Amino acid sequence: MVRRIGALLGFANTRDSELLVFGQNVLERLFENPAYPKPPLKKETFKTLLDSYGAAITAALDGSKQAIAERNGLRAEVIAALRQLGHYAQYTCNDDMPTFISADFSPPSWLVLHRSHWPSLSSRTSTTAKAANCSSK
Image 1: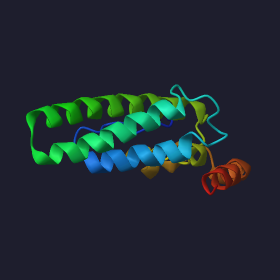
Image 2 (image 1 turned 120 degrees about the horizontal axis):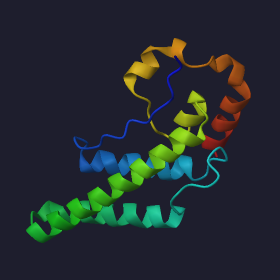
Image 3 (image 1 turned 180 degrees about the horizontal axis):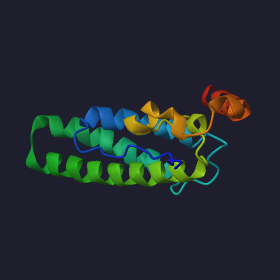
């Protein structure tokens, strides 16, 4: 049985600052990647959401209930957007691990540990090279 690549999308225990950095990495690596031609969100929409979330994180440092509530609401929106983008990357990569990773999402540890369940990466060198060239721009 061949296992399909899946994205780790559980962000419940992720710190706000880590979630923001992860979102910024996905913004940079997925939206400019030719392997992912039609993301389900517009780049500008996702960037605006991340900018608002970053500002809300800073505003919530004063401890006001309103600022914390706003930060938490934006956090939920960022998580929903990342899950949507993660599923998109998961299905668009065609089970090619280098292409999947080029969008900055991570596979579950069981998939990484059981490499025998997915095709050889050596046969997909051209895709790996394309993904590397894309992410270096």
